[in-house]
Image 1 (cartoon, helix red, strand yellow):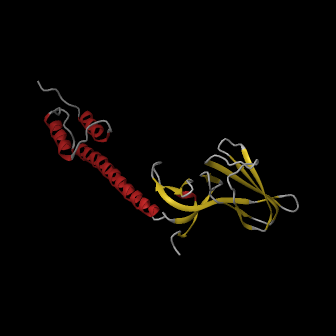
Image 2 (spheres, one colour):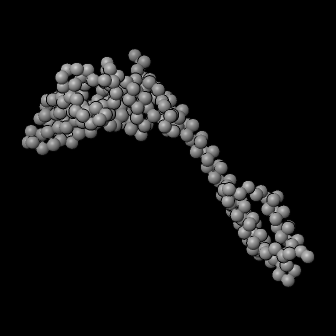
Image 3 (cartoon, rainbow, N blue to C red):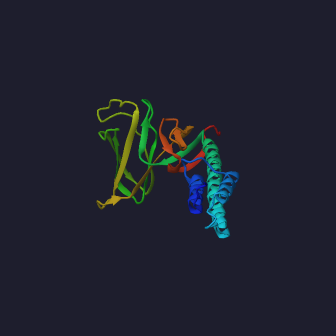
Length: 227
């Protein structure tokens, strides 16, 4: 005696097999085989209606379209990432300015740091801190007009001794003649020596060793090899 198979159960199984990430993928031919098997084993007293077949086919079509769209979007994303990486590689050899207050000292030269004052300042102070947050040098830069200010740290501490190579923080503060604070934005500049993809996304590597994501680039200058 042949046991009846519920059409609802068969349709649910087929849909689950097509959509479940752990189940084997079901293609059109396999889905039709399931429908034929459903017809062969249906209960004669409760035959499957035509609308049920249309619903099941529509469900499978939606699942298949969703899977195809996911694959296409993945391919597009990969292509866009490849184009972005190629564009990033064009920065090698160019001078860039990165937003932020991090500087890298290689034992000889520190990455030049820049600050921009929103108003004239009676006194500008640059505080250099190591990776542990310890203050190693405090530089009094004197009064400055509104606009750019260069911070050239020579890599020494307050005792005049050279600091070890590594990453340091340059905090620039400015005070107006009336005693109020002046707004300051900071950046660092350098020549791009390479582009790193080790973090999963392009990172700019300056000749000084400083590394930063592309999103921190404030401006790009001409190639350092340009006369």
